[in-house]
Length: 389
Ligand SMILES: Cc1cc2nc3c(=O)[nH]c(=O)nc-3n(C[C@H](O)[C@H](O)[C@H](O)COP(=O)(O)O)c2cc1C
Ligand SMILES: C=C(O[C@@H]1CC(C(=O)O)=C[C@@H](OP(=O)(O)O)[C@H]1O)C(=O)O
Image 1: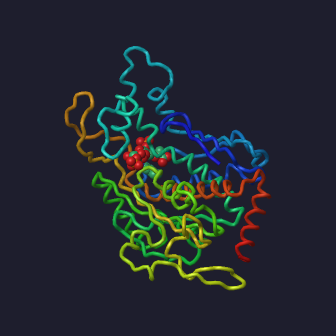
Image 2: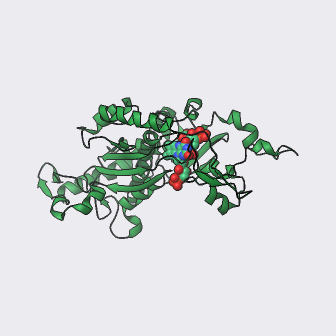
């Protein structure tokens, strides 16, 4: 499976084309819209999220709420487009209309502006920021919603929560099961499981905003129900943990990834890191611990996948850092675009989506199936084989 996306942040719409889905997967626009609305929530977002009401329109690949096996096309409108029609239009400007472009010539440190401008020769760095903007994560979440639907029909569930914002940490592993985690985080303004930490995180966001600053944090994605043996140890580019790490790193502003105990492992002896192997007739192989976060040798172990990603603070600052105007080469404060002060809660929904996509894609690669019923059978067979091994 693969997908491509197109569209600028303030252009008319975002588009995704998804290829390689099996036929017979039950899917509606509501399934996608549910995930899109989750991505829009979260304390710390800027005014843009009050303008947008992200809704997917499926324009190919689905009939009567079932996938056809043909490419799936979908679009999400930018409601903000109506304020940007002239600035972002594709038609040539008439003479003397240059100022309409809202040119960006003072690149923001930490954003793609300067390097993107150099790379594509854009002296108006609006041409860069329009596409480097995390607005694009809308359609990545739409693709992820479809992947989640596929996984769910195979008994695989994906959830996420925010475990740190601006130095405020939540207590790890408070939740008992993935359903409880899903339900409680949906009610939280920062997608955090713990109420005390949630309040402190909101205060930290408000303070950063008041100071014209921004803050980042850590999100954790949990996946339950993946059968053992998905991925491979035989070649570097088939290691599934590596693919998941790349997926997390592909989210705007993400700077690091860890699995299970993660970086903490550097400080621990092997005897307290590896997960002992146990066996019971009714359960097959299992572990009492999951310190490695569900992976051995680039393959799923059958234990929950636990992956975390760190998001840096948002680069646009209302109290901007020093930059250079690329026309005059004089020192100036960086441009200020309307901005979020913290988008970690939204990013945790994006993290779920990109992880779901990679898992669905590797399942389709390892168990090629044109039909959903055949795919379900392959996964059942794998589970049965693993029990008997
Ligand atoms: C959900 C989400 C919302 C974001 N909102 C903003 C924003 O409002 N302002 C901003 O400057 N950066 C925002 N970012 C981060 C930038 O998109 C990102 O820093 C930029 O594309 C440069 O990429 P890099 O940080 O990965 O190097 C957001 C990121 C995510 C995931
Ligand atoms: C539009 C979204 O996020 C945007 C991501 C973003 C950036 O630079 O990444 C900058 C802001 O754009 P704007 O200036 O239009 O408000 C965010 O609002 C979204 O998440 O849907």
